Image (cartoon, one colour):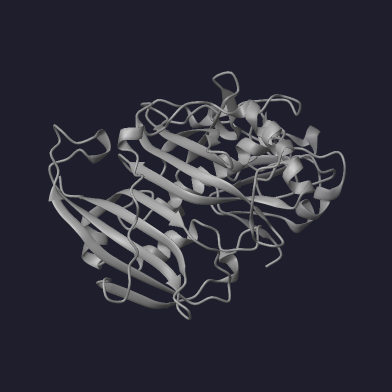
Length: 400
């Protein structure tokens, strides 16, 4: 088939000349527009091939009587669409014909979809829609989804601040010195997982962590209610991307990031998981899953397995009845070493606690009357048993 398949219901126009033949279609012949209207629709190859011709625009018919222009923002495609002004769509209260707002090519990016600075530019805020492929069997977002969104917001924070060099989240001074950021520990507390189609708002900021570390925190809110549904904190250090050895923070890099430091905690100190995670062994692990193999697509731009990928492997050794009946409400990851595509991995898990939570005395992130499960995990090399990640998880029953 010579046509390009589109999976969205759209009504659009392309101002490529002399298409369709004869000029007029839908009463708009004076614009020589190619009109696309489909649930699963097609754009002709001729229309597509003419995309390289100048000038060119993409127009979306957002109403019956008015064309709305959709512009690229900073050369980036945001959440799958090029868009500038877009109010939050609610099927009960919004008119879908007005979902896309008209904007000029030079307009400022829309904060909802691109991100913006708040709190005197110390906090970066970005909004995301939970997509169908980001939910699990229970139709809610997964821990991997949340971690990916946290990572995306952090990278966009660096880029939007004007500090980005040519590395994956590295600053200019770091890039000159062949340095990259690596995470050593991250702790996430989930009050509630969003569902497919929900909109979440993520805030992120950074602060110093000791002499040679940086702390990055996040807060995720429900966009509609502004309820805080997730909190996270992490510690990062610098590594040489060629020698793969840790490095002190050069003064030049420190001077770059200090203006963005904000003395603010997403998770209060008394609620943060700072306890040591015990090491599991063959003797202490209750379940071991071997033969886990990283794929090429698991690698990130820093040439090692992306830290989010570890979560899925860690959960491989969690009993299926726990995955089905309980929600993962807290996760702490302690990164020990890198993992490459050639490594075979083993996932170890052992239950460390099964208690009843008192909703009157426990911290907010642990509220509930259902039994709580706690597990200790280890992800290691299968060949030499070298540790990659230690982890601790807490689970609450899904039963209401």
